[in-house]
Image (cartoon, rainbow, N blue to C red):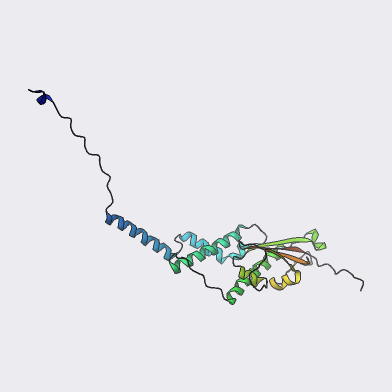
Length: 226
């Protein structure tokens, strides 16, 4: 045999396995499925039934979460969160997730929202008017923290011509009670009232507000000699 006959050629290497690619039809079907799911979620708002029920529970029981005895109450934050979630849910249901301009609230809507805040504030302040030794001198302290995300509503609450243009302002006791309501409580056979000459009102860009002042037994007016 010749040298050529004794030579055995090496076997050719097997071709590397190629990755399977999705067909154009499969890719298109996948995209369509995702689009349908996105549209369905947008049209129905919040898809988690537990979250939806929590939102409704907080909104239905807002006064109990806004307890003035707990200025740092997580409840206030829950109310704000629930209102925000509800607004998102309604916007998604109406516009399919697209940004929408909310219609301006009517005067009746503003007054209704302000009245709800007013009643919650009155209740919260009264709950703080418990007896303390400093009540004898009318120097016991009170403060109430609340949430009002709409500055126009807060303006109506405080009897302003529009949204507040300040972060802190002092209202006379008379002006404050004209806006919020006359506040008094009874303890140890004594009538307790707001006694501070002024009530400090704060409002932040984040939509939180704070009222603070003094309370106790009303003090007699100083004798001026006239």
